[in-house]
Image (cartoon, rainbow, N blue to C red; front, side, top):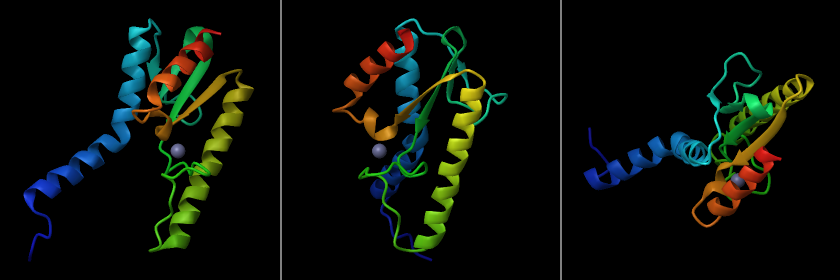
Length: 138
Ligand SMILES: [Zn+2]
């Protein structure tokens, strides 16, 4: 058995995997907390288990990964050529689930904010976080 990755490459890959789900969410959480917003995390009692729930504003916030949630027209949403049909179907299902959760949440009277991961990349994050503050405080 051979390890195709040298240790340096491997730790780089692992840090990429680890940061994939948690980094954008932590960024938003830290920022909003510092701005004085208070929220609940991953509320299982609400449709779609929103990443953040702001009871005071009756608002939920989803931080969506561009690939898993199929961000249309986004450069980070590229379906792999291998098993293309399976990926396409998987992501189609994720999107259908998202839509279902959003409409249930709307019925419950929640305002829904979706932030895409690409909107939190270094060049865009400041504008995104500012816009988020405005949306919440409105
Ligand atoms: Zn995107």
